[in-house]
Image (cartoon, rainbow, N blue to C red; front, side, top):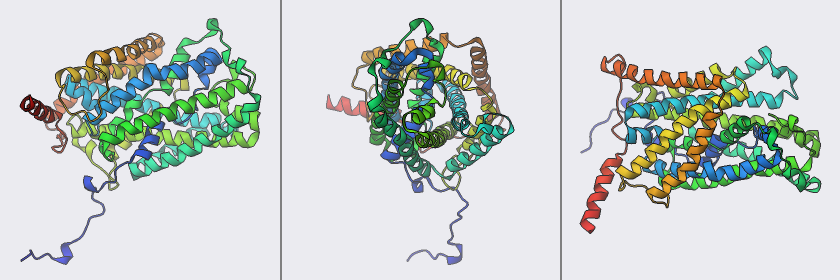
Length: 474
């Protein structure tokens, strides 16, 4: 006989957070476009590379730089993301290799870097629109526009990652389309000799490298929401591969069209100049399309970055690095507290200029990447038998050689930072050194509740099982 159940008591509280099993996971196509928006979002913002170094170095930069930086970072993300298929991503990698203190520092620097990065998108959005709507160039209208945009896009993140993912697909197609058309219109006007213009004596190396670095990094950001991905062990590597092709094509194609089809005036190549290129090549109608694509692209980059930042905080809470309330989900399955914290950071930083934002977030991002590289190699050494559904087809020595060029690049970017950016970034890092012991003290005094999610995968246990199986086979 079955148990008697009172029908009056059989109800579902729709206000309660959903069970994890009922949350829809992200499939490969939305994941490709989420990565696309984490890294790129289209050619908006690459114009400064032409102003800083001229057409030849700009083209070579976006052709060669992916081999130095993007491919190694994407490969490491694929291996580590499948080894740790959970929210938190690189924070979990560093914590597992170097301990919870450095894991927290990684989380602090990368979260702050991500929030700084997200503060760029309202700036870029308004820079593209101000030529058509001059009132958005400054003052109260610009401030109100930043506030309204941030609130609206934050709400999209609150509604769910699946919605954000398919929104990214739609926005990505709409954002890429005008540049494909612009390239076709440019073909009869192309002069290949214009691509070869270079003047080494007039290169602004700081602006050039920061522009390349900003437009081709953040491949690891998608790892912070790996727990929300459908079958991440196979989906994540595939999505990274297709996104890499999409990003590189999305930069080189319009850059070749714009620099090859119109006479060069380096001073004009600044934020938003692609809309002027579109007008020169095809008329006002294409300019408006590019400006609209820029607006939607910035929406896509904003929601993708905020998803990464907020799920990182959720993952840190599930690992006991942050108070438990950071791990609470809304009724849509989204990390409500993480979203609110990330949105607040964006509003506080939106007053900075484009170049200052890029330089500051690059500085913090570089230190985070050094910790990632160290953690990646150490995990290869101390846990060689841990399951890695995707493994870079190189031995440990080959992996060390692979990360030497990006490490050198990191040192160059750090060395070229201005004193103002360096001081602000170092102070931000020191705050993390102070914050982690304070949180441990709060936990010890039980002023806030901390807990570790018991459902998280344990790669050490899997390592032991693989070691035992290997010994039995031998």
